[in-house]
Image 1 (cartoon, chains in turn brown, blue):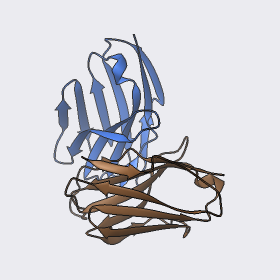
Image 2 (cartoon, one colour):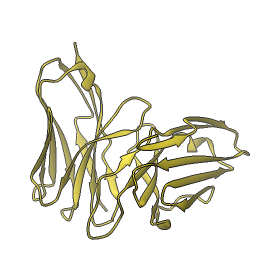
Image 3 (cartoon, one colour):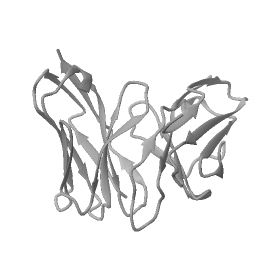
Image 4 (cartoon, chains in turn red, brown):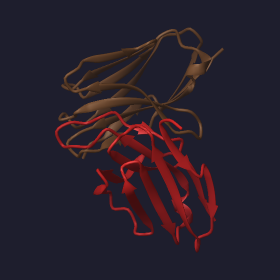
Length: 116
Length: 111
């Protein structure tokens, strides 16, 4: 496996279900990101982890819960979602994240989530 | 707060034409600007990254420029091909320490 992988690629869940999205990067990066892409809207940053520590939470509802056990893996735990949460969820990684510099971000293929 | 705007929202050109996609941003303290390509229902593929100290970057038929003073970046695609059909996104990394994305330009290259 190379680059950034995401599983599952497609997920349909009811509003009372609990599911998790998984992201794995094989690039030796230290920063990982979750983005949400809804129809007709720009990508929205959800969470950032840098060296396993969460550094950004862009006012994301608590029904989305991220977890970063190590620099290579990132999870997004989902529970009691709403239909408006249906979207493409993208994971990305970069070498690191600092205030003084920035690095190229590499994206996974995404998980298409449908909440029924 | 950084705002990124892409014009036009959609563009259709005949094969072989040279074209320019535009991106404007509001944060003059931008650190870098990244151009991506997204195929329908897929993730993003990074095309070019321009650091704030650079004026342009080239990769094959693609050339991206960055003008911080005017808050603009352009992506030039030479000799377009049907395989170039996709949505092109620009994103700026600014003082908020995160990538802010534009809404994209949907490009169709007609055979």
